[in-house]
Amino acid sequence: MEDGILTLDDLDFGGKTVILRVDINSPIDHETCELADDSRLRKSVPTILELSQAGARTVILAHQGDTEDYRSLVALQPHATRLAQLLGRPVAFLDDIAGPSSVARIKALEPSELLLLNNVRYLTEEVSTFTNFVKLSPAQMAQTRLVRNLAPLADCFVCEAIAAAHRSAPSLIGFAEALPAAGGRLFVDELSALTRIKESPARPCVFVLGGSRIADAFSMMEQVLRQGAADWILTSGLTGEVMLLAKGYDLGEPSERLIRDKGLAPFVERAQKLLETYGGQILHPVDLAVEAEERVEIGLDDLPAERLLVDIGQQTIGRYVKAIQEAVTLFVNGPAGVYEQPLSAMGTRQLWQAVAEAPGYSVIGGGDSVAAAGRFGIREGFDYICTSGGGMVRYLSGQPLPVVEALRRAAQRHLSSGPGR
Image (tube, rainbow, N blue to C red; front, top):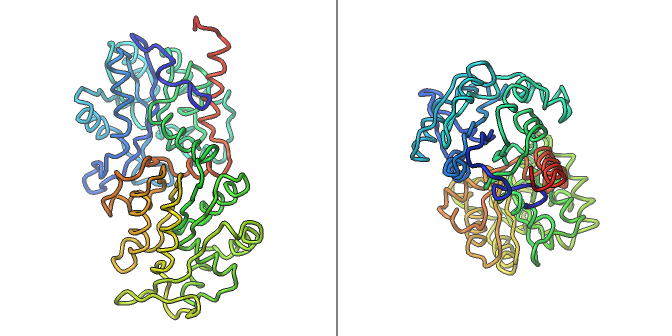
């Protein structure tokens, strides 16, 4: 058992029917309706393969798209085809989820056979519009049609959808309430990596926080500073610019207009409060690059800038790299600048390179952060790459993850039932 949840090592899957919830929600090429990226499918392969090799009859549930991303709300046939290629064994697909044909097909499964049912977000109770407004309890989720129809056919539930651990939906929570339940290999590994960062980081622990989603940065920053988990916060991107505003610097109309237009002005007051309490631990940029036809850097004395600020400068990079090299634990979320453009990629590239080469244990998370690591060809240098986004932020911000809580309840039931379960 890890982090209070059962793992694949705690249950016997031989000849058993297993409901496996994965997160293989992938970018779609809307012209061909094919998968544009299979990264999440690859992440799910080890657990699927382990269950199949153990002789389990594995029923795979997954979502694709949502009401908020309707163009990607498509059937999972391409996912089944690609999974079969990655696994090197057949993956049957059924254009049903919880109806009579699904029940009959699950009953007919042979040991080691793999069956992917269709997109669970074709069900009302699974879409975010429903879950955001109709707050079902875990017990109510266990009584939804999906769980009520499929759970009696299964011996246990395995959740591998760590990227959806912050969501409350029957396919994630209901089965964990109705069946013995464990976390898959990816789920457990990622939760352990985040717990290591959040609760017991080796010191010094450095958080590198940037990007444009500063609500995420601030929620994590406030929590880890309050808990004493972070020794240093290195700010960049819009997060760093808001810190400068909180210090009383005039950034210039283009950058301040961008911050206002994004609705980020209220974070200035939050930054001031953080600086009052933890100012010695929060580093802000001391120079910046401005939007221009060639790389142009300015110091804080040169503010306000007539052009948009797009990156941190070389003095800031040097200061941050020194902190990174001295760190024993590192967490990275949010690029330092507009990394997609050559003239404004220097900060992100050099900081990411420093983290990848640093001797400390490093975790990187967030779509843009991981994409930047891929762009610079240094993904392998990080000790752990998170697949979760919202869940990662929520967990490091001190908020409970509904799926983790459900798996922990299942573990307690399993332990209290005795070894004969």
